[in-house]
Image (tube, rainbow, N blue to C red):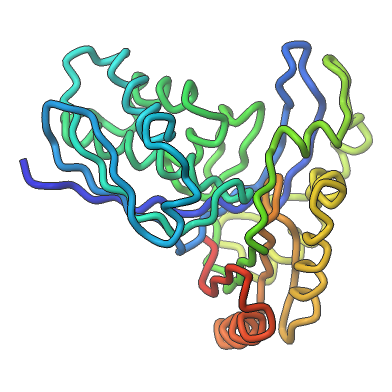
Length: 294
């Protein structure tokens, strides 16, 4: 069989509410998720042995290959499909790591899609979905790579009819550990954070085929509950947000996930492109991407 290729698109949390912490220590979330056009690329050359090699500007930040989520996802699927054909993965890594945009999760999800295709298994096969959940909380949403409302600890997914929005993503090249941000949030096991009144005030999901402006209007009323604790862990996130909010044409700027990547939605693609160029010029050490969310 010839090699197979998948793109591992960046996940962006447009809103993120932490509803509480379960008795088992996991946090219940409610998040509107979209996907960026920036991505890693994963190639599978089917074969008898499982292996991974990495190239690209982000390869060195990924650490050893044996603990990579690509390998972990493949092994978990193999547990569920004993006769699974494996192979050699080649990852071209461009997304920043520990950045709040699910780079590793997107890579793992791409690996599951590739293995499913190589073995004539549907991507939504229960065994594939189970392996995704076992790999990590963000892997199920990255498996579909479709805009959705994500609930629970990432297992409850409701697809959305979402327009393409011009956007800029910025990461100050500072890794942020998700566990540190949740520790700064400070919820105890079994503690609720969102009451009934706050649930009633949650943003309204626009109707099907709603305009970009209608979506932006609703998203502006949302929040990311992890932004404040993330600022305590890495104050530079505040600098990134200020820079994005100062750009011409920006409609909304917010942190994604547990940070440190932040996004800004613009009124037009030329405004997003111009903003990205200005930020790259003034902050050459930052990772900057202009494109779309959808």
